[in-house]
Image 1 (cartoon, helix red, strand yellow):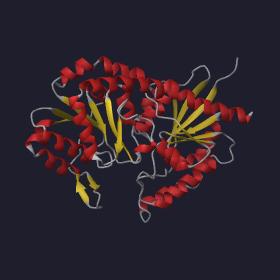
Image 2 (cartoon, one colour):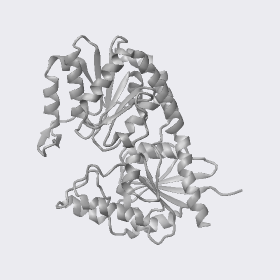
Image 3 (cartoon, one colour):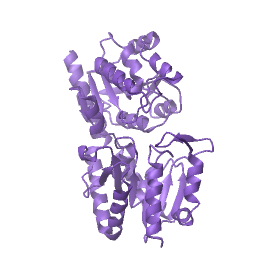
Image 4 (cartoon, one colour):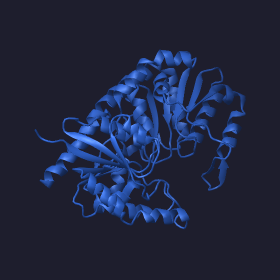
Length: 402
């Protein structure tokens, strides 16, 4: 009987983030008769226990990471720490050699120290790119990271066309994020219960935003959308739901002019308006956010990251209309406008409002788009199917090794 192939996945930190969830669903989609997974974390955190809970062996070895999203400024102490990741880590190299995997899959470009440390080990490397270089504080770091990844990686995976186009390499493949469509289906089955819990009325258009409370994730864009529509339609036509950990009093961010802004103070300023306060529901952090998405008519995924985030994939998987933003909407084929969702240029609040107004008067269109979105997610984002595309890359590399 042919032995299973050991795939070592390397993840940059121990946080339960979108990139970690994508890794988890990728592993869950593996053909268990052919492959088995182990995961090496480069920093500690709750993700280790999460991975162990599904029966995956984990390792931990702390090593510097190289961040470019947005990463540190060039002349900063943080950037000196960044550059430590450019030197091979002998302990990491020895650990990977002792694990002796058939192939290594690095789950994010921040973990490039693993690839550097592996040079000369003759183990095939697949590199996942899970963010663009659209927001970066030290542009030279983009050049460095791309150059090094092209050097050590045998295959590079971009999760949307944006990452694929940025790398400009014949090693690069575009494979969309993995979604557990079974989990999404469970969320859909709980729609009535969720709507009852949140006191959602069928007479209103219910719109959600699920993200971190910051400018890059589209916080202020969403509030401006809500403000515009609540002013124009004051009679409970719309209800806006915000899902995410609420900012604390110390949370600061830079605005578009480079000035520091207190996020909580600015949020409270928006909510000081009576119509805004009555029309917006702050749900805080919800681990069951998929159920919230499924209970909505529309989810607005209006980030300013240059590409679509994981929330777009999730929104479509639960059969809800997604209005998503992209730096170059004309380049992405993930959504067909008006058929299975909508894509607009990031920051284009007016276009988002226009789409929402159109859907308000054509509720049957919401139903049809929802059906189409769910079908597309099942066909193109399902973790079993997406993992198969990735393991086909594994097989290509491993067959070439023989």
